[in-house]
Image: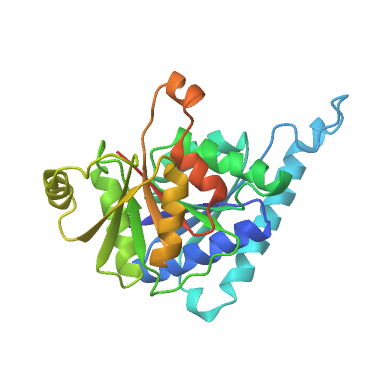
Length: 274
């Protein structure tokens, strides 16, 4: 892992994501780009007043961003890390997607409060928008999360799609950063369904060479509920999921398990792509 993108709105939630990203960078030697996106309508009144001061407003926000970063670099452990900043005018989700692409980011680390209250829904919608728009592995960090080198990982899978090579490399780097040698794999089936053939396990193990996989099967009609129960029982601290870019009708009528988990997550969630 060489590059990490950290979007920020200067909130406590974003600060927690930055702290987590710094810990990851410390163990992977990755450089960090901190991004702040200014809405095209931010600071502009209904009558259009304020448009003449857009550049000054952007410069002020850029200074705020630099000051925000300096606060984290006061920690002696992070002084040698390569951290740059970028302050753009643009819509948040699109800006994050395009910045990740231009920066050639291996990982996006961003905060999420879950779907608790109006503020949670607002930021949750940004997180949901990002994982719908990008194919860059994205690490969602709830405000209650704390980096621990002993945090264990679990991957929730439906066996329908496999991670891309890039996603597997990122997951492997994160496992190493947390000193983990085993990845728990959980698959949720309908209550009366039989466990999938062992060939699927072999195929996944072949795809993820170098990572020791430990398989668990759960039977429940409600996938998010089953996964959250598994997290509690197994004391798993980081959840990994594979996001499938389904068509519009699937999203409209069935929704996205990944988004549902992102909205209600109490543990960090690494969103990978196939």
